[in-house]
Amino acid sequence: MIRRIRSLLVWLVAADLAATLLFWGVTRLSDQTGKLSGGRGIIFYTDNAADASARIDKGVELLKAGRIDRILVVGGHRPQEGRLGSQEMALLTAKRSGQAAKVSADVESRDTISGLENLANTTSSSDSGRIVFISNCMHILRAKAIYASHPGNQAKALGACPNGGFNPLDIWRRAHYEAGAWTLFVMPESWRDAIIDRLRGDEGA
Image 1 (cartoon, one colour):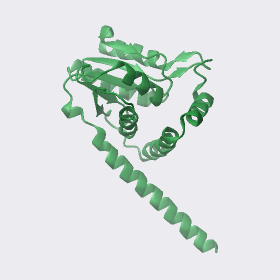
Image 2 (cartoon, rainbow, N blue to C red):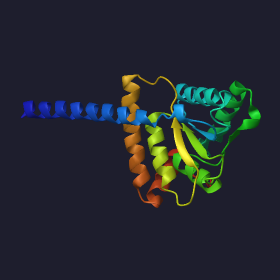
Image 3 (cartoon, helix red, strand yellow):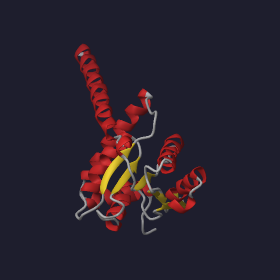
Image 4 (cartoon, rainbow, N blue to C red):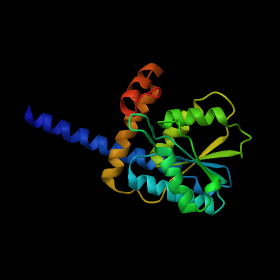
């Protein structure tokens, strides 16, 4: 009996690692940096300092190269902490790029879903022709799905992933975080809002 349980655990771990590797490999296709030629770059807030810095650097690189026209940072509104994460990252982006006039922040969004809802409500297919999501490749795949789920005629969304990010443990953690985030996305809106209120703070607070 113990041997069977041990064998089952080994197979479960192997399947989990294989699924993680496959998911990571597929999401690498989300990086469309080579296709960029203008539009608005959307940097997603993260409370991981290294990841945030990489996203900012990618956005600055694209802005300076003329691959995007301007940058908007979304997410990170933490009412229970009195913080505006998007604004903090926008200030760093403006400083590193030296082009503060082209950098702004959505100070109302607290997560990917609310950030993209705000974005979809304020953009159209004529708005610079396209939107460029700047984030981890695994996150970009989900962001595109959320963005596409909104009705209307939004600008086309492309993706640009920061360089690096090949640490196996970080990849495993991010893949499982994304699994939870996808689950949250497909939940009924009332359930989802209740969970996000608990994790990120109530928007009405």
